[in-house]
Image 1 (cartoon, helix red, strand yellow):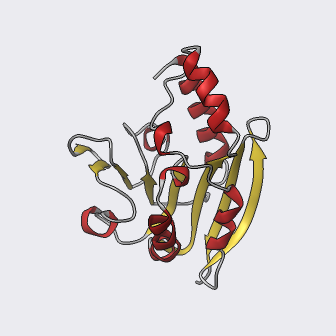
Image 2 (cartoon, rainbow, N blue to C red):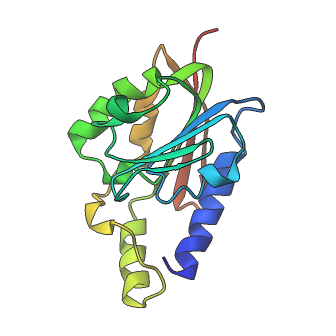
Length: 185
């Protein structure tokens, strides 16, 4: 990972962390990588899942698992419900079938009033990443999986179980943040 990759991750993560509930005990990071985001928060349970992990990492209240979303999510996690679920820069990598399955599996991962925090880049980012990779300014993790995903499709997650409470653009309008809250008491 190059310096610009790290800066963009830092920026994206800090925007997302502003929407974490004030009191939370458990967090899941889908596409956790090496656990960067989970290492920035303090709660009782911090779980992560990522297809690029080679082996399970367990350290105190942190657990990172190799696996894919949504296929492996129910088989590997310690908890069945979380207070906050992150999915930053993940949906542009999913197939259509995985996206469809996500709409149904994500609400089931949240406690009542739990938050789902998603970031998705604008499709134009793919062209920008190509130039930045050519110039060797970014590593461009798994960009071959990008498929010009329309960020507004994330609004389809709104349902009788999930209420969209925030949608905003950041990173010069090239990234989108969506925050949902699980309906219920």
